[in-house]
Length: 511
Image (cartoon, rainbow, N blue to C red; front, side, top):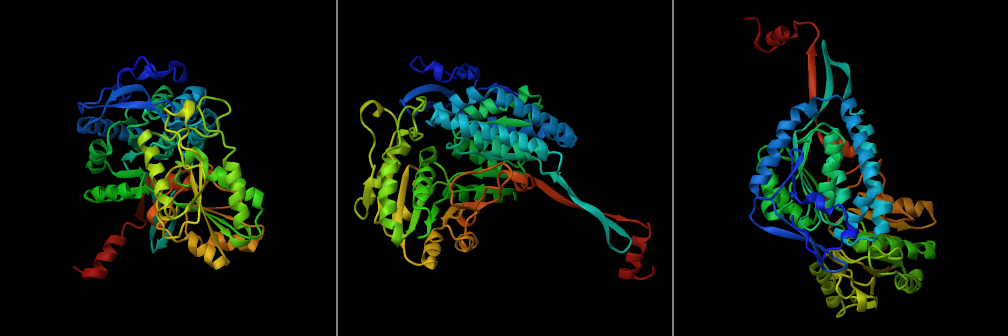
């Protein structure tokens, strides 16, 4: 890895830890063998932070081999031993919280207050949760369900897990994928996004320093087309877990089926934000701004489509636009910053193109432009509110993945719920009402893996996260996630030592 002279060292004082490369295999850093390099760029300034050699198929093979070799020992450890290791891991992560927060802000453009208060504490909490969960993996109690036989169910680790994580929450996605897998006794190879590898590498190094054996956690940093596809197709990988776009998720599923792998997919979202006419308007407007702009809108669960019952519609648009205009866009490291840049200039331009096309059929109420002045070199985009779009328009149906909220009116409750369900996605949603019966109906009928009531965006380690329909299947976090990384075995004992003979006589007669 090369650190250019124009990088800002105080933003990430730990960057020289990766001087030996951006692949973490069998407990040590190595250089990628693809022959190509990639740069980590600070999206707030456009400056290159460091460049590294990308992983190729040989690196993936080495990482899978390391995970395969480590599997028998790790799977054979007692739950208490794995739990103790994960508790130590959580403590090391907590001790390195500031370095992790700064690295996450640097590579993603997230405000430092967000990484300090949300990304890093959430990841530490995940480690603590799965440390406890490691001791509570259960099958079913033994019982006699068929004559003189005793049956019970074992939950066992699957083997080597190959995971691919996105760039929007690199640290948390590493935690969500690695922790339940290894708590259940699996080993793992994780491919982070090539834009944002820093905190995944730091996460793996912390695991080693906590005493988790070499080869249990491996990181390969390469492109999806080369390293990612090779990982998914690898015959020694027993399960694939992917978080990213629905389009790429379909390709992952296609490649994985060739070797009949278990697949876990957390894909795109277009979360509806349904405001009924009895809602607390002020709370809903604040919730919409927070829900739409979290992580600069680069969140699959972000509020993107606000459906507001007509009596509140105009006032909601006015109040939400006014609140958006108070959001402070700026340097992620400045204490007063609310909203940082998008992850890259290319992604900022993609978001801007959605808004620019929408001007021909909708009204941009506020935002809709990149800031000028001292922020002009970064990948910034102002918080944007769009009104007057049709339900079948691009900004309503497609995942923009930026700080853009579209507001549409509805009349009856039936219409509001129908419109909320009228996209291919089903990851998250929220309903806003003071009426418990109305809200309860919305939670039943909105097709999404999570439906918040009078809130939008909070998550906790004990509760599952995952989608319906084109948003994928499988759960992250919680005990449900833990079970995703196990396979079930039925064990059956003949208690009499004569049952097999009796069965033989039943089927074949006396011989």
